[in-house]
Amino acid sequence: MCGIIGFCGMEGSTERAAARVLEGLRRLEYRGYDSAGVAAVCDGALVVRKDVGHIDEVDALQHLGALVGDIAIGHTRWATHGGVTQANAHPHTDASGRVAVVHNGIIENYLPLRAELESQGVVFASETDTEVIPHLISAQLHNGHPALEDAVRAVCARLEGSYAFVAVSADEPDRMVGVRQGNPLVVGFGEDGAYLGSDVLAFASKARTMATPDNGEVVVLARSGVRFMDGEGREVEKERRPVDVGWTETDRNGYPHFMLKEILEQPEALLHTLEQDDALLMDVAVEILRARQVVFTACGTSRHAALIGRYLFSHVAKKFSDVVMASEFGYFSDSIDRHTVVIAVSQSGETADVLDGVRLAKEAGAHIVGIVNRPSCLLVDESDHVIRLNCGPEVGVAATKTFVSQLSVFYQLAFAMVNRLGEARCDLQEGAHRLDILLHSLNGSLQELAWELREKEHAYYIGRGINFATAMEGALKMKEISYVHAEGMPAGELKHGTLALIEEGMPVVAICPGDETHEATVGNAIEAKARGGRIIGVSDVESEVYDDWLRISRVPPLLYPVMLVPPLQLLAYHMAVERGCDPDRPRNLAKSVTVR
Ligand code: M6R
Image (cartoon, rainbow, N blue to C red; front, side, top):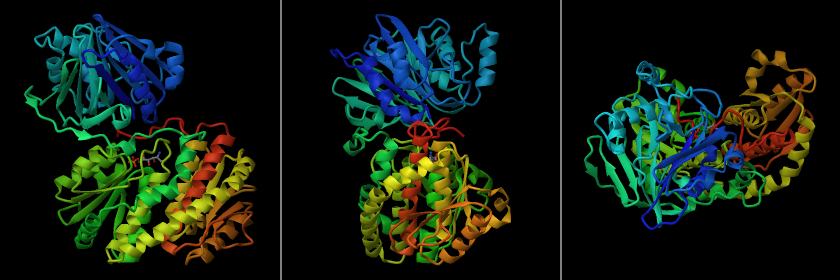
């Protein structure tokens, strides 16, 4: 949700900073892409270029990478405060145009700050919350804090909310200053300069080591070196750690879209999730078994995975747990205490609602298990135990391979609780092999089906038991990238209202694996067909009720979601393409949702 990056060339470096920043912005584009901009400092002057559109569109108009100078900052935006306009795009400047800021997060008290500045005669150029920051910095620079780093520190004392920002000043052309409070910001150390970025992808292939400022710490990237300071201005030592090279590969590798690449990568991703530390899994399994209550918290696709995790824990280990939507967690946390295990599931480890819930649960004494994909993220810092998906970067905004990886982790955890981890791993290995065959065999027919369905505006997805969440996930994928209204629900609920909406030709995707739910779900599909529904059966068992049969492989019943969701992802992908939508850049979405 907005990506920020800065590059400061070291003394002697001949690199044009704006070109590095532009390269980083392209890698951060998944965080938001409605507008973009770059500011560069050169010979005591500050130049800002920004516009509406994807990075490449803005670059074509504004030649972002051509800006000269050793210091540059950049931003790719996902609009929160203020519409998608050139004026609202970052970087934002003070009135003199000598201070520029890129920001990710929300300044919650921006309205009173803006009113205060306006009463002093400041004229705002945008509708954003961000713009108060450069104006406040400018005021501090002229009022007792002539050094940019001191001015930034003084401004932070006035800001409420969670944020990360980077500031530059034409009067200090050899440095940039970054700070974070609740939002991510990492420092990368390259051979010819240092980077600040919203995440490691900003500089992945350029930096060998990295460090993370703590909340409230200020980092100064100067041509002479990098310094970290606490909120009082005292220097602090920072440990550098290596950049994970497995995390640097973000090419489409010849695929038309990242989403397709990542869907087809799922068998391999599943195998990578098996690379877990057994002792860690066993520790977490014991914590879960010992806990008086176990609560998952997550959003979107990660929440659907958690719903499946809940079934797995119950079926395999007879351990009850509940799933609370992260945005609702705060309203539902009265019973959280030190006997509670909270399992926070988040691909990015940055989702604001998840982090809020985790912090609340920690205060109440709960034990936090974070399940994350991104190697360095805020959730890792907040968790007592961290289980990593190990499936590499997921660039597509729609979560795909991280979903099946989350399922794999839950499957292993459930079986670890009953001392049958080895059995789980064999199932998953075999599952990965079958999934590979399945994806390649179904891709062509899913493309044809998508072509036939391309003009539909509504679809229903039904499933039972562990696969009710599979139906929800299939529908979410369809909604977010194809803009088809799709609803997923427990099949048994269809007749309690929704059946009223089924009419001639309406696609009804029936998730009917050959398990204990098969007969009942087929029964619900028959009811939908009787009202004119076009039944798309996803199953390993044939049935006369299906108008279209997406035949999947037979696997152990608890592994069906791993086999069922990828074809639904592919269907959504092909629908998006047939409808002329860009699956990698769905409208109004960002991959990391760092605002509430
Ligand atoms: O990074 P997280 O797993 O916390 O993200 C949660 C959701 O924002 C995410 O799953 C979202 O629903 C995806 N766009 C779904 O494809």
